Image (tube, rainbow, N blue to C red; front, side, top):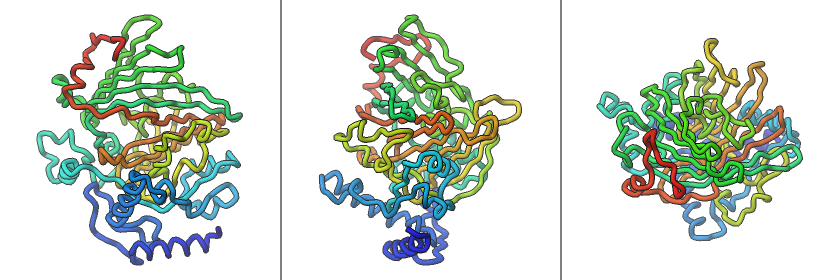
Length: 433
């Protein structure tokens, strides 16, 4: 597809969804995003888009063949035609396309699916007006109109993530020949509402346990994650099944690497980004339109086999849906007084959900080293956006780390969680937890 035909398609699409040229609306959504679409038609208006997305998802849940997972891509980008779309491709995606001739970006219609339960919307809408409220530190999205990169990242860290959940995840490390290793992790995450202690400072608690391979079975990690705006340090403990003892894990943050990842990601790359902001200087480059992994609902299909998804150096293109969305571009540069394996990082944060969708990570020599892609889905039952898949490309090692949900076990009531988990330093690591 030539660039001229591409622009014609965009304009026709814009007309179909009722977006007028030069639409410079002054209104915003409840989360602070621009409610109107872009003048070039690439990004649709929020309310129209949400309505169309809901129709597609309802068809999917009804088992119909015209749901969102059956949509066909508008066009495909590969190494041969990537220059035509470079304005909307991150440096990381361009590097991946150049590195792997078999890599493709399938581009679909854009749907701004991000939404929240009504009570959460009301809390988000009041983030600015009631910022002096005694409970201000727990505000979801405290900076709806950020003035700097730090505020954008704090929005990502402070976003609503549900109250409690239990899930299983499989992670794969795939090499250039297509061979892979698999690690399984079970985890529980709960908010302070489920416990009586620590509610004044804790954002959530996490308990994680390996269930495969055999060499890692029995190892457990416990994390106390503080409220981001408090700027307090994370507390973590590790239980080693080999040593049969619990120890503090003061290094479970920043550029520490997790077991089973073969060093392909750092601790602060989990969940797009997590933890302290103190080692980097954060610069905001404004809001731009990029192609990002979005509405990756095709991975919800329980009949898909891992062999269908995994390929050499990357996963099959058909399973990662790309759409045009406006994102906040934030550059993080390592402070001279700090240590980290990345000297520079560029984050692309969704304007609607405030979730990190992509990251370009540079080595201490200034070379683009790793590219992270974080595909989200809008959970229908719980009604909030969440990550379905993460893809971490190592451009030097030519490997990819691919963690994907295999099962969301449940969302619990607080009373149930209390009987299952104690989160004191003297916790009991029982066989059934």
